Image 1 (cartoon, rainbow over the protein chains, first blue to last red):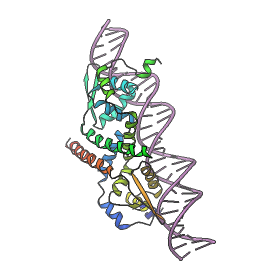
Image 2: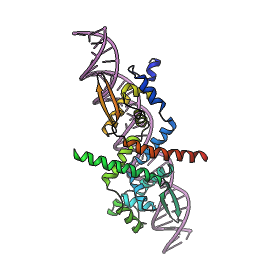
Image 3: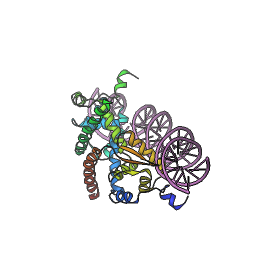
Image 4: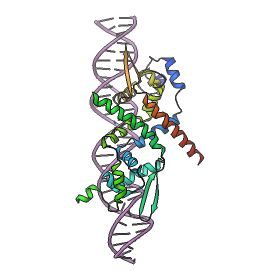
Length: 126
Length: 126
DNA sequence: TAAACAGTTGAACACTTATTCAACTGTTTT
DNA sequence: AAAACAGTTGAATAAGTGTTCAACTGTTTA
């Protein structure tokens, strides 16, 4: 493996376009953060949990029954959502109530929903 | 396994809150579409490709050299992005030029970036 | 204080997914 | 026509992820 191959296994590169793209590329750290954020919401179960919490705080049992899932599975996903800063929780006796920690998520969701609905209609036309 | 367990393995359910959440829950189909959309952009490599394409069309070699990745790997990811409707391509001789098919993605990215930057700063304060 | 219950946790499992590798297609160049 | 090259593709591999299961913590109730 030559040193050139380590960087890229091809030669037909449009230098100008590549340099332009590289110069306007956000920092790796930022891109990583963006991807991580999307990864968290890129799962049906977690999406459903977030949508459910939009109507107010819920305990683990509530969410489990809304999604028809086990408490354990829901708890695992809630831990991830909490870890990522999307939700927070509050203990009250035996129960733990979860709520959205980050209302901004739904600003993003709203824009996305609009976009996706539009695209779904477009797809239906085919 | 009782029928009750199939639906949910717990009994402490706040009926009112659950019904409220259920009634405002988007259709499964829509939630699935949202999750799929986020799954596509919830990957560092694909995110980088999209950011790179924001500055204009690029061939596979260009992208491979920008990301320091193999053509094959890039091609696989481009196929997914194309499949999801995020990018389109145009053949010209031996080369294939990819470009964003869906500029709206960056409306969403912009809102998200703002949000994530804000959150990164908040985290740094700790 | 013991039983009951909400919730968490870690290991195990099945499943998905990103990258690599090698073989391939199709276009261009010699 | 053959060699060279851009790009694609499918199989294989390795890494990551969601759910289940069983054991556990901590709070409440009988």
